[in-house]
Length: 608
Image 1 (tube, rainbow, N blue to C red):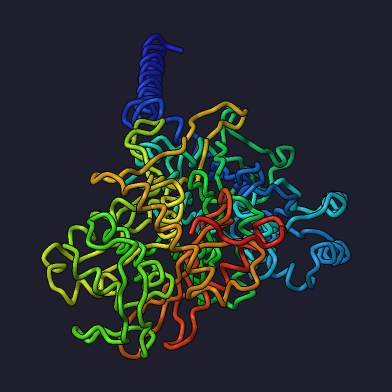
Image 2: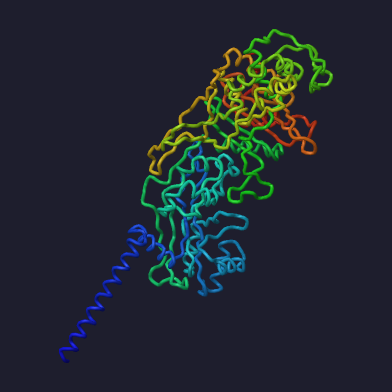
């Protein structure tokens, strides 16, 4: 080779070397600089792997709920049949498919159809269910021995257990996909790829109010690596990845008691209630032991016909005569009456078109008797004696017309927290001027017009009277712990004082005596005649709606036992009852209290 040719070859080699170096530099720039740095490079690598894999989320990593006794309300782990897409690849023999169908208690045709239509990894679910069907240990082992292609038995966590002794709880709520809200709340987590836009977040109940704490730090996934045609790559098999942090998921201990909740649901079913709510509070501190709402709902099928995801225990509606408790308290506090005054009811009030529910009238009544008999004429007269501000402020003192659920201005993470985020405040008057009208005020005094309260407020009213006028803030969670048992935060019992102070203990005592009279000889005496315990409370029938939508809401608010230390305070609401139907809520209250309280011989109510 001549010297000139050697020079040309050397020059060509140099050009090729320079081009190679430029290509390397360019690639590095795309991955590390132009592509957003090392983090983006890692993300590109992750996306590349995802393109060659099928993933199945076995556990979202979301925090779990327990009842007050440590029983699970969410997070049931089961052996689930997991299947991955296998285009054109036989799963197994016809015989093995038939055996698998037998284990799943389904028809082979349905199983084959499900497998052939898979476009993403999924778990087997029973018809009409959104939770994985759990296999027994024996069934799981039998499936493993079948050695089917693209099929595995894996531990899978159902969010809402199938074996709970109660219906899905409105108080717990549900999770759902809400990409817009997720982007707004968790944009940083999305950017860091610790969350996906398809992740489910809290949609109602505690799932909503505690969502920022419950969302966890990552998911547990089963990954099957495939080639471009989604055929499993030999030797790589199935692998499971999970976050390596012993602190998560969090455990939220609620104040709910599954036994009490079950008895509430049994009482509702016995009385054929289709719409309404029941709240049971611990009379000692207003902890929420049970909160039932109807119509029922399914957390995975929100909006389904004949269901309602709204928690009726937190929706404010007219309370009817239950509000006479507030009117009586306001009249005693303002000094416009006393327990020695006598009233005459002849059935008609004489103005505003108002009349008593008893058309012939009650005759001469004491103040306590007027409350026990729920006389509209007497309470309209008391309301007209009062300035509207006296009614409004007394209601506020009793926890009516404002949100009362447990809340913190700065929780453990430094942000505000309201446990019952959907709780409505209710109202007494639409505005201050409205109450100056005598007709409005008399209607308000008997629990109609603009008055609205929630079943939670109603039950808490009984607790307030039992504590001499001190208002508690009902809580539904007592503590939050890490997965390893360490304490994240306690949610201590909390008061909910009014800015206007409290009613006098003497007034609270007078109201308790009047509530005992209701059960012993008043409007609820017949419904509670067979009760084995001394009980106390107040019934109410409220007119709701107009025209064709007009109906009654039946209320009863009470506590028991009434002859010693009370254990439970209860509010019962039965909605959409026909006009003229006798109040059904008192009988339901009586049956529920009999199931909650220990069996004892009936004792006469004391303290009158």
